[in-house]
Length: 355
Image (cartoon, rainbow, N blue to C red; front, side, top):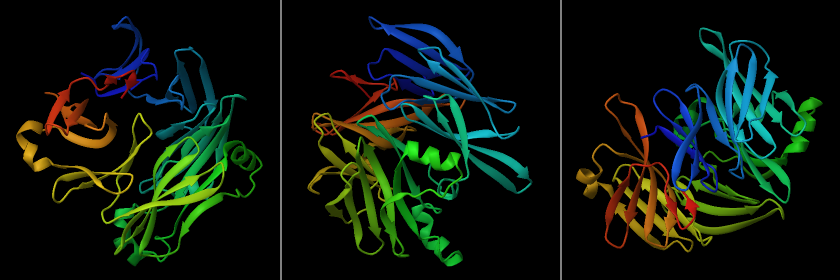
């Protein structure tokens, strides 16, 4: 039973968070061989190829990054003592790290660092779009190029109505991207960053939101508060946007299955229903969670992470042990028999796919 689990793409290495520490395993012939453990206050992330685990912690004013399984360690100086890691985004050769530091009783200082692993250096940036966004940025990779993607959005989208009364500019948001090497260059020289803006919103009744990024393709929604949601696909390499479909309901996420087919899902918290549509907008399945209260018990369903063989819907889920520690599990809904199946493991291997 693990609180969080991370796996390499081939399932050869696994990091599992227990109550006392992270445990690192090498899997050989279906046997879990523990090779090491790391402190529980460590941030763990996986590179885009899912080949290397990056483990982050701060000691005094140094950021320490340990790499598994290759054993490399990087140590970088931060701007000062007292910083805490908020979040980390890992690419293949570059990492973005956000920290906070208590400035006084009611103020925090936010710092962003870019770690260039190829050249073994760290660059601090005060880029306004990064610092003011409630999102961490994204990194994607295609044709040996790593691209930084940001949502310039200061307000969580579903708090937008309230925020608009307090700030005339809170509704403005953009989705933009830039070659990460160009971003590093502008940050190093303290130059103004010229983002490639793929879509912008200046309308208080509209909102843009990134849903999924896969290689050079970016899926995002454009929300019209009274007119539903539009789903768009942007090709970063060719700089072309394509409207896919319109939905009456909020789009919570995009799933791309093993056949590269697209599914769209929405969760209605009021009616406790999960709806999944295919790429033409037709209903694939509707799961009324109220019908499964006894079956689910205290299990909390989070995001949908896979649709397999057009019948299995895999949920990331969690439950709690006797110490109220959160345990990561998988719940699978079989639409052919309308039943949930609980997997105590936080990883499922299905036809050589690690989920």
